[in-house]
Image (cartoon, rainbow, N blue to C red; front, top):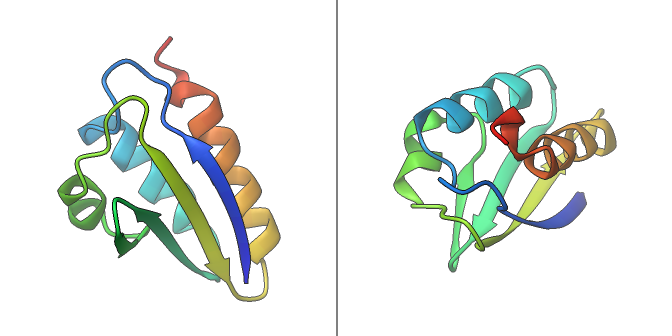
Length: 88
């Protein structure tokens, strides 16, 4: 299991477009990928689950992956969040 903590920094948080980009990135990997935030853990390959978390600017999340390419998955998703999904 590989994990990384990151804070949502883009002004609008994770709304539909960033959630879609996050899911598209997560599904490229074979590993099981999850997001932990606000006491909940959800499947990072499900746009509905991510949207249901209400991730706004300043929210700390943990990206977790377990599988053959877990390190690459966590790095790619962490870098995506740190890039503010290309919105700013």
